[in-house]
Image (cartoon, rainbow, N blue to C red; front, side, top):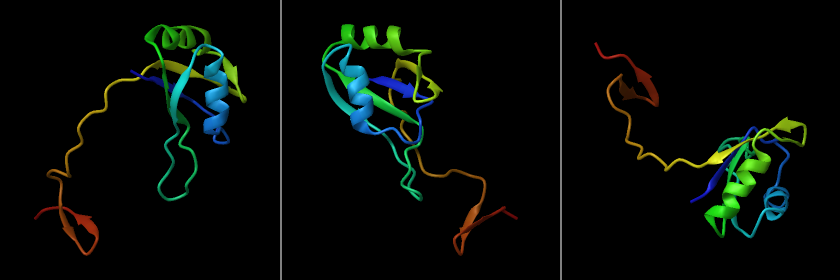
Amino acid sequence: MSVYVGNLSYEVTQEDLSAVFAEYGSVKRVQLPTDRETGRVRGFGFVEMDTEAEEDLAIDALDGAEWMGRTLRVNKAKPRENRTSFSGGGNRRNGNYSARY
């Protein structure tokens, strides 16, 4: 299981987030998704800890806490949904989407 951390500063690093969560237990992994075009952190991340008890402790302590000028949203991460390809809504022509006639 992992923990979702939202409303992060765009300047946050994996090391920053790991250090904060390390206060509540052993951090196994930190993921900070980045924008494909800009390479900038997208403002949320995921932290995986050794035990669910450590994750619960971190969630209780950090949800609603202010950090790096932001109020954090911290909760259990939901399983990732399967994504399907585009369906309906238009034909792809010359790299653009257009309505069906």
